[in-house]
Length: 449
Image 1 (cartoon, rainbow, N blue to C red):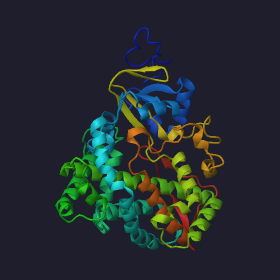
Image 2 (image 1 turned 90 degrees about the vertical axis):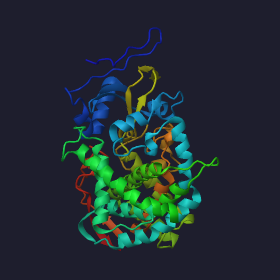
Image 3 (image 1 turned 180 degrees about the vertical axis):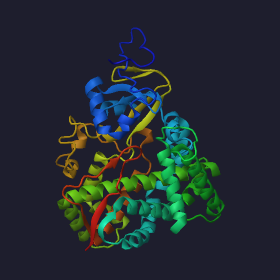
Image 4 (image 1 turned 60 degrees about the horizontal axis):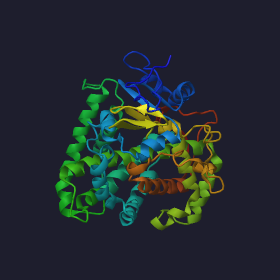
């Protein structure tokens, strides 16, 4: 039997109470949701509709399915939904005061400064800086059976993030140490035991945060003094028209958050692309022909618009596996979504990963079909928030253009050097307990062209 959530709607409001059920004692619906989010979302929607509640990670949380509900939260016209209190519960101790954890006027202030680090001249310089690192990284790949794409992509994107965003080169044990710190910090956000028990996720995340803080603070003075063409320098130099700049703490906090976001989300997207292109080789060949037609081994900034097929595949990969699987918020005042009363202080979740596979918006939603984004179809136009991998509203991902540029730059070079495949019966085991990733690191047969 469904139970209503928290406070009842005000008398005469005409609003409905949120239906749902807490799930199992203590753990609620946490295991069920993380183990198979797609089946979980389908069952919840069939039973309760688009708005329902359950206990997740020891909190009653309202799940908001479908683009109409997503639009209400992400556009946030009445400023009822806050990022900071929600994200802080999940990742606050590890990504303190990152841009995604700020709200309202403070968020706008920081975003205006940070946007200078992602303007077109900066993007052009980042892309130029990336090219040799991409070439060096993928030339070192060793073709053969069982080549684990996820591991190699993660190492490559970390190298790119440190080269381009920091202007430093990390190799060997130091690269492994920083990469491991980011992994521990991200995974700590979905820890079941949310206090520092040695050896468990939360404790590892806290240690990881200290590693990352020391790493960036050690570089800060030199970066402020000497500058450069990297993101770290851009954040040190960025200044608003009225003279506001980031403090040292601001720079460190934003660097930790942006570096995590830049390499984790791009890794997931490229790994997803590689998986579906292995399963659908006709699209792989189509992309390869397009890259070869550019006539350059290394993509330049003005070539980005010459790869429309990669654009389609990126969009479909983001639809099938959203790198950020859920967007949490917390209400700062009583509000409503689709006619349901949401009391102040309520955690809500927009489940990006599953929202983009709803049958009423996406024909054959489980099928890999990049053509659905082509100009003659544009299935995403059915609703502005049917496709929402970068979020929306004022919190829409500030690095989305950098992400597209990086992914195209990497795939352009990979396609010209390698062909890859998986056995026809292979289905990747997708781990959704944190950010989505293949449990087996996606082993492919890699062949040099």
